[in-house]
Length: 254
Ligand code: G
Ligand code: G
Ligand code: MN
Ligand code: NA
Image 1: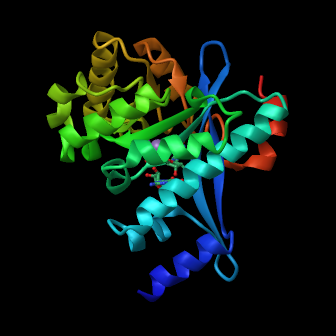
Image 2: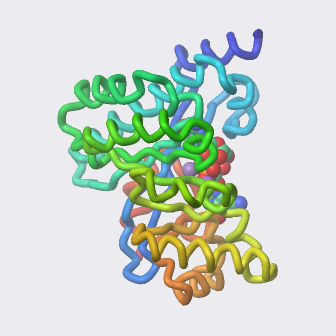
Image 3: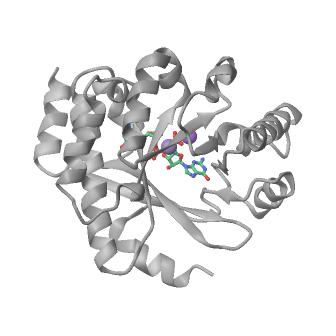
């Protein structure tokens, strides 16, 4: 409880911030979007990663509050970048608890209305395969309503829940993200390579674009392109960075 109160204070005291990691088309070099990743700039403990504080609010209403804060922050940033001539969509991670709240799309509509200069298509939501599968009807309903608002979805951590294959077709998902745990070892582990190949094959069959996460080396990039996956994100391209660093990074990116 003490930890939770501390987190509420952090929200109110503006100690949370979003870092942004570029997503690129490896073939053309074009930057296609950004993933927003939360950090806690803790006054005593320094910069904390989500794994160090998100578990304390897991499945509590604070997850919804945080989720709305993240969406709003992304919309503010989109407005700022738009004025600077930077037009890249932002992908926001949505927790399972948040995705399944009954008024999810109404709240999203309200948040979008507060930022009228941002086209809804500039906001993308990353949802976990497991969240959608937990309650497929609720997920489908919320996602369809958001899609009607012009907001699209990516499936995060794809490949970690293969039982869901039959449901994939039902969900309004415009991007499939191949989980970095498979990408990391694909060059040394035949099983991981098999999973990456299968996901790429499947994404192609479903005619959905796919993006590989955790691309750390040129060898990974080459292997993924040879398999037909052209979108990527990872330390080999750029680490997540504060919003202020993005314009300089973009200016220096080939
Ligand atoms: O940035 P990092 O690799 O430490 O992120 C770790 C995990 O935290 C990832 O699974 C990521 O999806 C999750 N995460 C990062 N930012 C957010 C956020 O704003 N909301 C939610 N719900 N999860 C996030
Ligand atoms: O679960 P999700 O995909 O949202 O989490 C993305 C997380 O992965 C972020 O916290 C980000 O910091 C981290 N990440 C991004 N690129 C790389 C990478 O190339 N290698 C590793 N190990 N982690 C990465
Ligand atoms: Mn993600
Ligand atoms: Na992921």
